[in-house]
Image 1: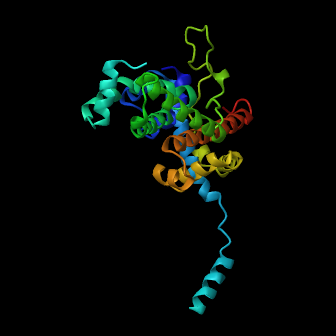
Image 2: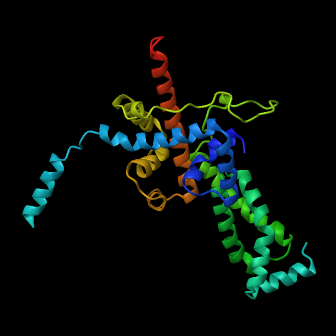
Image 3: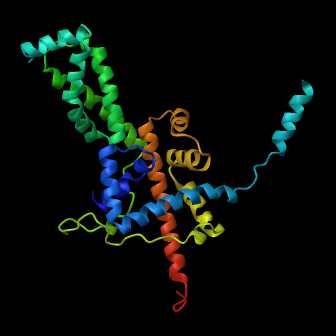
Length: 76
Length: 206
């Protein structure tokens, strides 16, 4: 497995979708290649950053919705 | 043209002989995968194509007339399904390399396909900065719609792959291809940003 192949398999690896054989080749390559270990760490860092973007998001505008909800409730 | 042995095999399959079917699968699986891979980009999608082809084989067995060999007939079913899938997949997921090919050693180099310019470790604290997260958010918003939906559902909402496939009505394999493209692009955007930030540090301070 080359580094160029490995970067295309990274998601299948993290998702547990590789065959046992490919997984073993992937792990073997990682053990010998600092560049690919850094790449995998970057992908994991990317996942954390994507999750953390939630912190940036504005609170959604709920006032209108709440009004509709109350309105609905009152008519019940 | 079918041989007598093949005609007998077909008769056993029609009679519901499980061992005959198992042998048929064993004998064809590898080639079917290879044929499927001609049209679709990932192994996972190819496996789904093969799975679907087997269902087609079972459904069509009664109509098999032996005008071609059984193998050819089976492989044609695979190819037809894979072609359809390949077209559909190409529409959702244009094939693009996850990492700029220039970063790898070229053909002719004894280490062809290995890093020319290897990635570096990212500092954890910079990764958590608002400015960095804004870059990530901007890149997510620039993604093609299907990729954006998948990364948002999986990596922000924490949905399972099954949930994503069900909602978007895409196969598990396609779901993963889209997720892969999306994550790869966000990683590349992050790398560009973090490299720029590093280079912006005045000399002597590194």
